[in-house]
Image 1: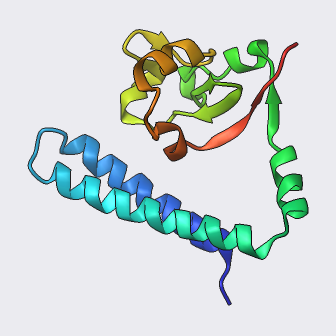
Image 2 (image 1 turned 180 degrees about the horizontal axis):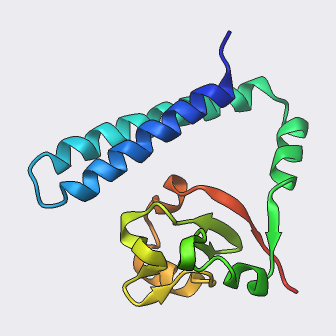
Length: 144
């Protein structure tokens, strides 16, 4: 039987290993090979997600979506990547984890510090990219 959780965990571990190898080989010719392998693994994750969407009704899927954590800006500020804490950023009302992103090493990205809402900054630099689809979604940003 196809265990979705097990498959997602396997893919997560594979992707984490590939990303680590990419950071070690950033200026090495094998970097492009690792990037292709990473894209293939992400495509496999997308297939698993499509399986989940087909398996569960929209009502069940809505329940999973509603269970995501709700963050205020004050809550979000805790997740700045310092002292071993995860690094989260909010973009367009959604909160994403950037802890394992090489470009967010140590919870910073080109002078920006994790734990904040960077919707304006993101949209001015990455408006038409699919970066957010590659980041783990951890919650919603709410007023409060």
